[in-house]
Length: 415
Image 1 (cartoon, rainbow, N blue to C red):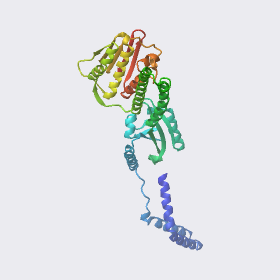
Image 2 (spheres, helix red, strand yellow; image 1 turned 30 degrees about the vertical axis):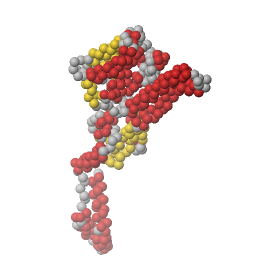
Image 3 (spheres, rainbow, N blue to C red; image 1 turned 180 degrees about the vertical axis):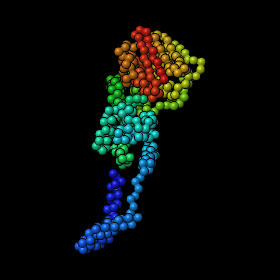
Image 4 (cartoon, rainbow, N blue to C red; image 1 turned 45 degrees about the vertical axis):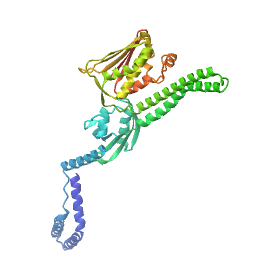
C-alpha cells in the first residue's frame, strides 16, 4: 500500500511538471473533436501523456529501504545508545512499548544483575509502584517518577524515573528510559542527624544534670570542703568519661551507617585476629574473674572483611560475655567452618544468667538494655550490639543469638 501511494505521488509530480505540453495536446484534441475526428483526438492526447510521463528518468520512484537496512539502522541507534548509557553511573534500563527490557547499562548490571534481552520488566522488577508507573508512561507518554526502597542485600533508596525517548524501533515503536538515582546516602544522613539528636539528648541528659549539680554544689555549700571536692570531682570525671564513650559510639555508628552498602574485600585470617582480641581483653577478664578459652582450627580460616571492624565486633561480643556472664567464670570462643562449602562461624558462649526470651529480638536496638542499672554500672552505652549489627550487615554476615535463663548465652557470627 505504501509503495502504491509513492507511485501515485510521483505520477502527480510528473503531470504538474509537463502541464504546458499536456495543455497544448488537449487544445489540439479539442480542435480535432470539433472537426469530427474523435478517435484521432483521443489517441493523440493519450500518446502525448505517455511520452511526457516516461521521458523524465530523473523523477523515477526512489526504492523503499529493505528490511535488513532498517534493522541495521535500528541496531546502530541502539549501539550508540548503549555507549552513552554505559558512561552514566546510575542504573538505566531501556524498555520497549510491550514492557520488555531491550538493554541495560553497566551500572544496572552491577546493581541488579544481568537481565537477558527481551525479558519482561515484571519478571525482574518486583515493585508494583514501578511497574504501574512504567505502564502509565507508556499509555500517556508523560514523564513519571517515584521513590523506591530496596532492603537486600543492604538498604538502598532510589528515585526511579521513566521517560519516553526520542528514538523508535521498527514500525515507529517508541522506547522508554527507566533510570534509578541513588539517594541512600542523603537519606542516611537525614536519619543519622535526627537519631543523633534524639538519642544523644536522651542519653546525655543524666550525666549533664549530674555535672551541673556537682558544679553548683562546689561553687556553693561545698566551696571550702576538701573531702567533698575529691568525692565530687571523681564522680564528675566518671560522668564526663561516660559522655565521651557515648559520643564516640554514636560517631562510630554513624560512620558505619554511611558505608553499610559497600562490602569490604580485604582477605582476613580470623584465627590470629581472635587471638589478638583475647590478648587485649585478658586484663578485663582477670579483673572480673573470668577465663577465656579459644578453640581454632590448625589452618587459616579466611573471610572477606575489614580488620579493624571485625576486631571491634569480637571485642564487643567477648567483652560483653565477660562482664555480663561473669557469674559463669568462663567464656568459650570457637572458630569453625570454611571447608566443604560450610559457612565460617565464630561462636562466643558465656555461662552467666542468660537473656529472657522476650528481650532477645531487641538487644541490637540502639540504647536498648535488658537491665538498665546493670548496664550502666558496667559502663555500657547501650550501643555495642547496634554497632556489631551494622558491621555484620556491611560484611554480609549475620548474628544468631541463643540464650536460656540461668544457663548462659551463645552469640554466633555466621559469614
